[in-house]
Length: 425
Image (cartoon, rainbow, N blue to C red; front, side):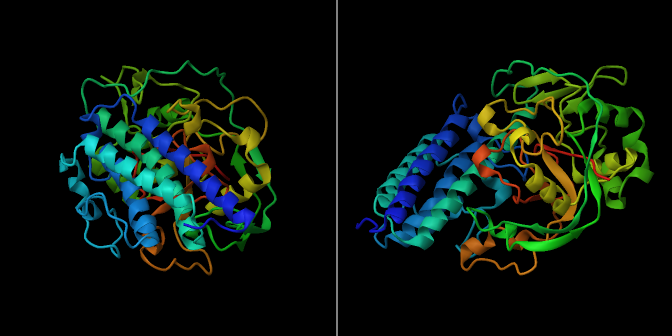
C-alpha cells in the first residue's frame, strides 16, 4: 500500500494507529481478573455479556473498515457477522439481544483470538491508509469502543449484583476526602446562545449541526445531588407521594416497587441503607453523588426539592462557559469505578464525570440534522424517540471521549447506568 504523500495525512494515520492501540489496550485492561464465567453473564435484556462487547467492538472494525478497505479480506469467522451485529439492520441478520448470554460458543479464548486478528489487520492497514472516509470510520469506531468500555462496567455491575455472594470487580479505592457542604447556585444570564459541535474535532452526528437556541436566565446547582440529600427524600416519603411524580413515572414506581435507587438495600425499616458497588457491598457515602436513578426518580426529586432538571441546552451552555478544568469529577481514567464527593471549590463542579446527569430534554434531532449514508447512519438517528438526554459523563466514561456537546440518551425507566442529577431553577 502507498503511504499518503501529504505530511498531514500521514500524521493523522499515525495518530489513529496509536489511538487504536491505546483504546484496545484499555478494553483489555478492563477485563483483567475476569473469568470466562464472568464474561458470559447476561442478567437482563438491556445488558450484554462482557464477551459480547469484546466481540462486537471487533465486529465494528471488521465490518465497516476492513471489509470495505480490502475486497480480499478474509473474515475471521463468517458466522460472527450475525452473532455480533447489534442493531445495524442494513448489515443483515442479528442474533436476538436477549439471547446473547446463551452464546457459550465461541469461547472467550476464541473471542480474544478474534480481537487479535482484527487488531493485527487494522494496524497493518493503517500503515498505508489514505481513504479519508474509512479513516473517519476508524475514529468513529474508537469512540464506539469507548462507549462499550463504559457498558462493560455498567453491565458487569448488574450481572454481579445478582449474585448473593456480592462479588467485587476490583478492590475498593481509598476513601475520598470530603466534608458536608450545602448546595449553592450558579446563575447564568441566558440569551441567544449556540449549541452543538463546532466541527473542530470528532463528534457524533447527533451533536450537529451547531445552531442557535434562546435561553431565559437560569441557575444550576454547583454540584450533583448527594446520597445524603436523596436519603432525606426517601425519609420524607418521596417514593410514596404521587403528587411528586409524572403519571407514567408513578405507575412505574408502583409496578416495580421502587423504594430507593438501584443497588440500595436495607434489612429493615430501622436499618441503615447499604449499596452494591463494583467493589462489593458498601455503606452509603453521604456526600458522594446519588446514582443509578431513573429519569422518573430524578424528576420527582427535583420537584420535591422545589427545583427542576436543567434542559440540555442550559447544561451545554454552562459547560461551554465553565470549561473542563475544575469542573471535572471522577472518570474512567482514574480507575475508581465509583463516583466521588465533589472536590472543594467555587463554581460548577462535577460537570464532567462521576454521574451522567438527567436533563429535562427529549432526545430529538437538532435543526438540520441528517443521518449518515449507509448502515452507520443507524448509529444514533433511529433512536430519536421515547428517550431523554443525559449529559456530562460518569466515573465509567473515558476522559478523551467527552466534550461539552456530547449527548447520551436512555429511556426514562433506565437505572443501571451511572445516572444522577443536578438541579436547576
